[in-house]
Length: 244
Image: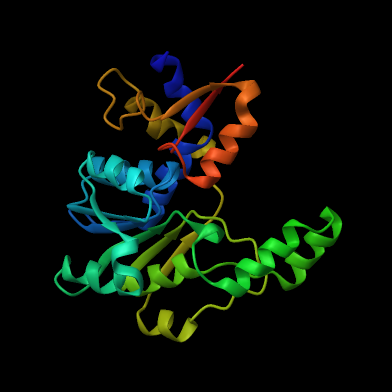
């Protein structure tokens, strides 16, 4: 039941989301935009609100995920409605400045960038050894979310990168980043580092809503279909717990 589920998240969702917010360095009462409201982005938005952010803007294009985050007090923007104007939409809600921080919880799965998408499709159909060599030496990612983060964040703000980028030749707009004085923090979650901070929150008061965080509970033998549903963002799936 839910009391046991709380501790399952200590191995993945909670430490990754906590570190994403920690790295975002949102000032007291500050503002943060979260790109992508999957498991990590959804939980990062909850943590940011819990830690005192005055405004958390969640950005996604999946209606179920937007509705879910909005129910927790997140100001949600549908990327389908704003498209490339998403930066303007965020600035309209932050006095024209942009948010103090942006958390990119999307990474290489971002929509857009058709050339890089084609490259990922190709490597996905190559033998593992060949695909690995290609990505290591000529890898490209779909950088739409990261470019959006650079646009959205205010001057002197911070971008926290929790979404995974695996390419080795990703082009970054360094001139823009330099001009905006952007701080960029990233990396794999240091799980053990954050457990002492997280354990006090896994109480019956459940401030982060972990007891109801999973949208689906399925038996282990249904895992292949669950992975397909998650990738397709179908059936309202955000987080699934597999039960042996």
